[in-house]
Amino acid sequence: MTRMFRTAAAAMLVAALTAPAAAQAQITQADVQRLQDNVYLAERDVTQLRNRDSGRATQLQTELDELGDEVIYLRVKLRKERTLARSEFTDVESRIEGVRTRARSDGNVSTAPAPAPAPVPLPAPVPDRPARTPTSREIPAGTELDVRLSNVLSSATAKVEDRFEATTLVDLVIDGRTLVPAGAVVRGVVSAVEPATRTNRTAKMTVSFDQITFGGRTYPMRGTVTEALEGEGIKGEVGRVGAGAGVGAIIGGILGGFKGAMAGILIGGGGTIAATEGKELELPQGSVLRVRVDSPVPL
Image 1 (cartoon, rainbow, N blue to C red):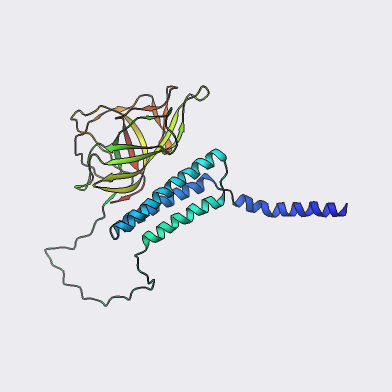
Image 2: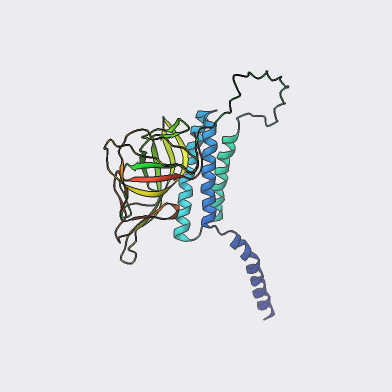
């Protein structure tokens, strides 16, 4: 009897000690979102590396695209199974950090700091040629781009992780410089979808935009849908493009206009698009989505 009591007490003690560890090992959607944020940061590092070593940047971008797909897989798996092994999470996390480390490295074998250069006397300033402050080329956060869908999006057929494309309607011109030309290809991703059913008559679909391509180069971005507009096709009307507060945008290019807010469509937070008429959510080819750039995009 005494032995049974001691065995039971030992089992209870082991359970009490391992419970906090099990709770600590639980992965949440917030953890997976942190992984996604790290992917975006790594993409920025790779973009900056491209100016120094385009071949190496292309190799790292391929790895990063695969890691982005794995993050989406982890998100879907966690949503469906409500649990995720920490080993899976840490494996992807460490690989993303590895890409960031290699992208930020200058490729030198030696890690010793370079000796400080000898001071060089500055030339006397020229009165009629004031010093010019360098400006960086980037799409500011808060900028809105109007893009036209190249294919149909439907809650009845769309699947999580589906990719789709859209093209920008007009040039994005800021401070007299064309940053994004009309016709640039923007890639979107379906991150969640709920088709209409008898019990759930509100079909929903969440989409985001993760890259923009023009001039033969691809740039990572984070974009969220803020409005769905009804396309009018090619009519020779000047479109328009929105920008965040303090950002000037000059309209350029004629690729067709749009009528206005699409009937029966409601845009929620985080880029969730919902049908309001108890039907499947249908965004026809040619529909115009207004996309807000959520973080600066270095070009």
